[in-house]
Length: 230
Ligand SMILES: Nc1nc2c(ncn2[C@@H]2O[C@H](COP(=O)(O)OP(=O)(O)OP(=O)(O)O)[C@@H](O)[C@H]2O)c(=O)[nH]1
Ligand SMILES: [Mg+2]
Image 1 (cartoon, helix red, strand yellow):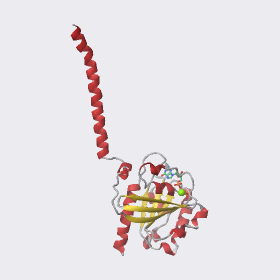
Image 2 (cartoon, helix red, strand yellow):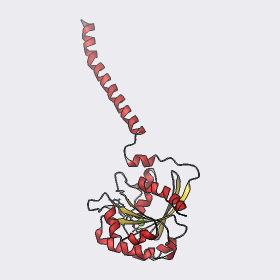
Image 3 (spheres, rainbow, N blue to C red):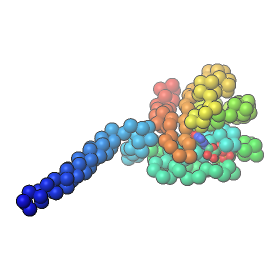
Image 4 (cartoon, rainbow, N blue to C red):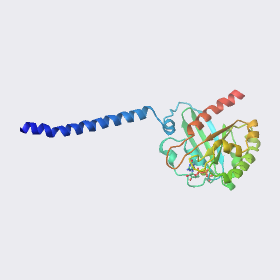
C-alpha cells in the first residue's frame, strides 16, 4: 500500500521534470537556430568577418547640424561602441576609424552648424566618397540642405568624387522616401559629372539599425567602380 502511494506521488514530479527538460531542449534549439540563421540586418552586420590587410576607404561625412552624421559614423562600429551618445552637436570634426570586413573605414565627420560649414572643403583630401546626410523627417530643411550641398560640390577639389546621399532617420513617422529626398536635392546635373548613390538609413536610440549593410557594400564596391571607369 505504502509503495503504491509513493509511486503515485512521484509521478507528478516526473511529469514536471520531463516538461522542464523539454522546454530547455526547445529553447536550446531555438537559440542554436538564431545563432546559425541571423534574421535581422543588425545580426548580419555584427558578424561581418574582418580580413587581414583590408583596403582603406576615406570617407567625408557632411550635412546640416542634427542631420545624424555622428550617429551614422558610429553605426559602423560593432557591439556597444555604436551606442555612445550623440546628443551634442559636433564642434570641429570627429574621426571614426574602424576595420569592417574587407575595408578599413576612415570616416571624417565634420560639424554641420553654420559656422562649421565653411571648413568642409578643408577636409577634401584623397577621398573615396562623400556621404551627404539629410534628415529625411525634416522637409522644412531640405532647401537649406540642397543649397549647402551644391555650394560644396562647386568646390573644384571635389570633382569626380562619388557622392552618397544618405536619407537618415527613416524610422521617424514623417520621414520621406530616399527617392523623394533625391528629387528634392536636384542631383540630375551632378549625376552627369560624378557617380551618385542613394541610401536610406535608420539608427534610433534603441532598436535595430537599418541601411548600414547596404552602405557597407556600397563602400566596398565604390573603389572597384572607380577602377573600372579609369
Ligand atoms: N530616431 C532617430 N534619431 C536619430 C537617428 N540618427 C540620429 N538621430 C538623432 O538625431 C540627433 C542628432 O544626431 P547627430 O548624429 O548628433 O547629428 P549630427 O549630424 O552629427 O549633428 P552636428 O554634429 O550638429 O552637425 C541625435 O540626438 C540622435 O538622437 C535615426 O536614425 N533615428
Ligand atoms: Mg555630429
